[in-house]
Image (cartoon, rainbow, N blue to C red; front, side):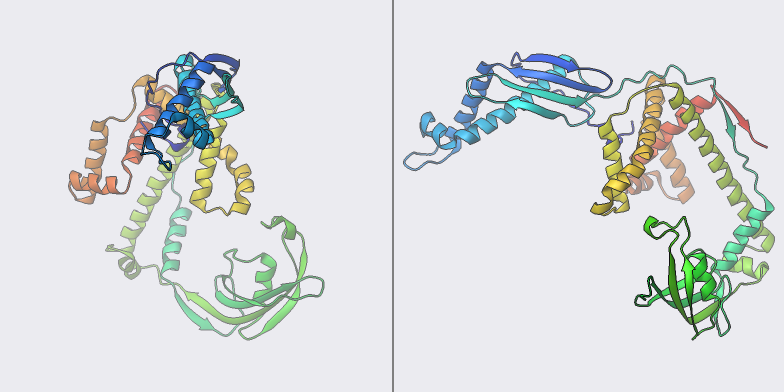
Length: 432
């Protein structure tokens, strides 16, 4: 099964001598649990004595051979350390006893609150934990979803060919004013309230929305070597909210202009792009690639809509800790600076929750219906990939394992099996 990092850990049974602790659940709604725990004074005393004996057998004290110092001397010298070790042991073992007696399936690291550790008295604390949600999914069929059209238009083919031509374009310096599509190097300075900032150099492709419209218009008023200046209003949807709608004085100096020269769309171009005998062969390949991509996007849309229908029709809770962990992994992957962590979390929290709900739905169906990927499934998928790459399955497996992608393949197979199961039980209508 896929082991998502936000699922919490699977705990191995931890066998201890039970301490006959008192367990009093104070809150048990949903997936959050608050449990009062009381460890008898006798168990506390025994834990302290064990910790003291460990210290006595290992510490060195002046005037005594290693391990031969009297217990009273050791306790006087290391009393606080002994009590701290005993406390950590008691809390850990009490927690394991609570988990076993309450049959809790823990979702995340527990938290200890209101701890009282007074000599000669029972150890008491309150344990706050999240448990894995119980998911039933009583309704997974009877839904009707639309499948977007996967038809490829001539305009799409033309746009893809134009992109290929653009990739092969040559750049020629020109001395006249720049036009949309030209590449320019410009010096730009902006200022407010009569102040002007130091000019900075920018490479810009005009028409590619690399600069705001007002600045692009200003650039196209000057030939290489010329400078133009006038007020420009920042758009109301500018990413930096503080600058939205502001009007600033902008000075632009055009340093140089390069104009693209696109190759002719002919058989020679097709041969330059790849192993194509003619332009018709290139067009056919482009159309087939676009068709495959369009069908993949349509399939993904159907899967997304089915999952949304199931989630909206089957209520279940999601541990907050899982959401926080997934948001944290997003932030790490995107390299979010520390000072932007909070705003990033606010923006991505809902996305993370949707992802977790999606995974839980898929995992629940896979488990209930026996649809999880098997070793045979994985071997067959790897053999298919090896055949396409013209290599051996063993080499393919070693390569994938080295790249850490075996789990990814396992997950993909499981999802494919789950969605095939769902498609058999729900109606998909293709849009014209």
